[in-house]
Image (cartoon, rainbow, N blue to C red; front, side, top):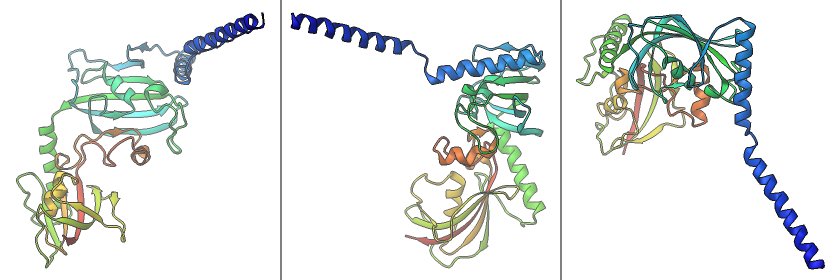
Length: 315
């Protein structure tokens, strides 16, 4: 009898455990809860402000501000010329790029937040939309310094000006580099066939760099406006094998034109640098995403860069 009672209790325990496990399968995850909460916040915002917006299949809500049905829809990996403004639902402007156009690659890995691309999904060239991006298509629980908190929903005004090509960008950037060289009085710098502009600032008396060398060097990487992107520290130079692709094309090509002890200036179009590096909006969180391993480059998409290089040693 005792064994029989024990068997009944065991069966009940198994049944209870099974029911708990089964019910847990139907419980919402935190992510699913946040999805619903973000959608509700946006719907409430739209209703409170009498905004009529459509919900796209990809999850964003949007309102067309300017239409152009005769325009062209972008295709994956094409380069888009856009203007945009990003703000939170309470009206705080996180980033604005409306004075000039910005270049971004259309694709899932082209822009952060991904909701930006989802806005482009419904657009033609010449159109402007206001997209309401839920947190799960933006930064989820990530908080961007003093710019926005975790699980923030955004409003993105996007204007799709045109669709460009890598070739057009290259030619435009060559013109921009030559105008910069003239403006800064850098003298007569003849580009290499690849488009690298190399200027020796201080001669070196050592051997010339070859692909079999391991180079020890200092560098400062800047945008064309002079703002510093990254630089080596005085007691921590970069040690790199010139036989590999550890350096971007233009940087490696420039170092291979140098002698030990030489200092040089390298200016290169994005094609020789970081090309279609992911566009991060807002740019203020780029470094944090880089340090967290979420993106691979500190350089913005389609940017001309310049390097000031000192070749310390070759081995």
